[in-house]
Length: 237
Image 1 (cartoon, rainbow, N blue to C red):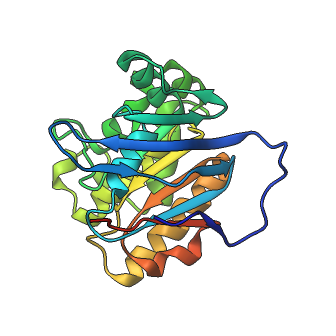
Image 2 (spheres, rainbow, N blue to C red; image 1 turned 45 degrees about the vertical axis):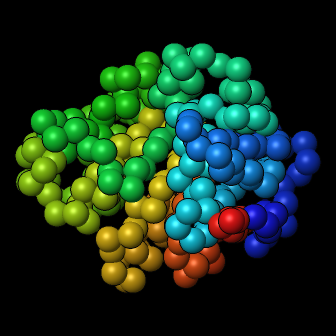
């Protein structure tokens, strides 16, 4: 694993950091192999691209940052708060209030409409509900419009949408309520090059508007130029 590199100059050292990790290590249960990760420092509003081959620990690192798993050792601080000692419930609450997550398989709720999926974070977090402007359904409609989801699809079951449309719905769900941190796990793997680049540009534009930091995981080196910083993870025997 190599250290984080920057494409632009670093923000002021006094700026509040979105993500800080130190000596992060994770070992899966019943495994003799431990993953060790480079330290990360990411300022608020900046974006990080994490790349590496299969087996290098990209998705595991994202799960550690999201608080979905607890590190074997080391620490994860998000938005100036060390979440490492948090209970499962505290980590779930922190994620609901402060993070939007775009999963590789999207993880949309099949029995909800398109609009219902996008507004779901506001039903799980009163903070996200308050920050949705002017109110959750209207912000959701605005996001769906910008992400080119036709109005005729908004009240349909999300399962009727194409893969590309479902991907954009997952992005809208992550962005609603202005979370400070967006985590994305290879969400463009099913897209062709043109649609992939358009999606990345729109995601980063919307994140910039909300003041969110984006951490984007992919094996596709062609996406790295869209981001302020990049981190390469290697597979170790």
